[in-house]
Length: 219
Image 1 (cartoon, one colour):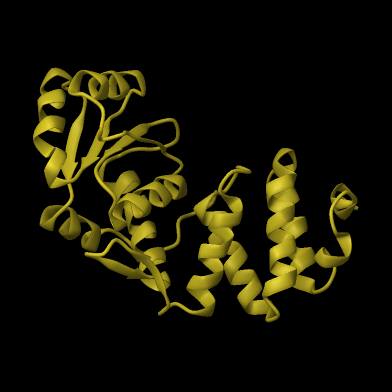
Image 2: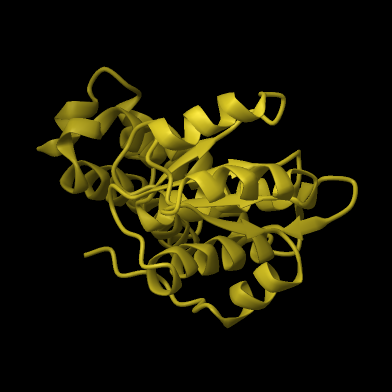
């Protein structure tokens, strides 16, 4: 029984409800080598989601956001859970822009489709972020996770030659920036023809609006 793999944890918690066992078994079947993170997700399903449909939907969102890794699984699970339980609750606030949980899930899904469908990126491709604290920063990180694309946040305090080094070393193909760092990013991209710069603003929002909001095929 795959549940035996959880013996070192609170098996009683996993077994409390059908969705808890379902979550744990589904997690282990997805990637037995990553059982620790997914077991924790299963325990969360049992402890917090008393409704079977909510538990299953939240788990599916968690799997979509981070399909095969330990790090970030609990955060992904919580995001999925809140998007189902209370989609109108505040999720992000950068003091200029806000996002509800429902909006956050919708936008991260669209980011993933934008990366895959419009920009043609896939597993083992790389993008980077060069921007201050803003809601799109978080959306792009989770969208990249959902798309299976590597993402590198770049410290905006770095000098231009240091940023250039990170872009080159990470083999970045798309650099997402805010207005404050756009000129610096374009100067770097001039030296790196394979790097595309996408600035936050109207053009990005239009591209995001045109991207699909459909759940990605996990296969």
